[in-house]
Image 1 (cartoon, one colour):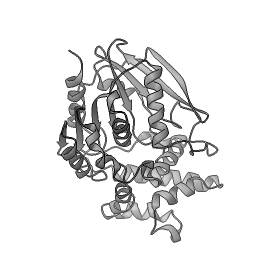
Image 2: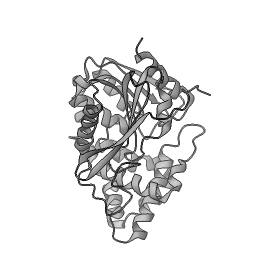
Image 3: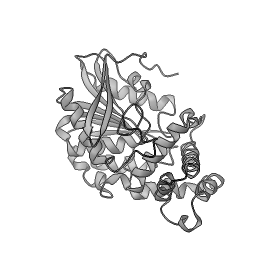
Length: 319
């Protein structure tokens, strides 16, 4: 079993007013005088739990965790159907990150992101390259329209029974269209039964398409109806809008990452997020090392992926 750093508690935390009635939760742990490192969680909507702290040497790093708008400890909660998502876009999240950096008095920080957090980290770094010292990314995504189509439709060729159930929830007239948009509409339905069924089936499909690595276990958080609703609302909101980015912009603008050292870790068994996404990025962002893990899948699904991420944060820690 991979030796993570021991669990620690934050030494400071707070709620930052970021506008539009939103307050985002943040916390800092580790060494107050250490090298700043920001964690960008996945989902969108997963929240930044205590596990993330264990990816950093607490004696060397000032670890900053942030719950993105609408999720976990941030308010208002996207699990509440009355919570508008109109002011929840990638541009808003990037602005929140900068506001938090300034609030904490940080000049530059290492940024670590996983899955959706990679899309957000890349978008942030391409816009604010001078504020990023290094990037450590795993389960590399760009959240393009093609990637969303791949996950919501093409993966049905791998898991046809599960996809039939997933797509079968959508009204028949919409099944040949954008399934993320269709689910987003169902999650906004005035009937709570429609919303709850959509959240349940979206999260069931989420568990299926990331299940290709040996030893995969379903996400226990999906057993919580409130977490399911929050997660499904935010994921479909961002996926239906291709992360609110010009399609293909992250790869096109990857030259802006020149001079930023990085490590990208990606499992070859992550077929819901194929390895060519990371490989294409590595061809442009030549300051990054690409680590392909042969028998592991999405997320921190195995020891080798975790070891590679730990090796990256250890490589970049101060002497």
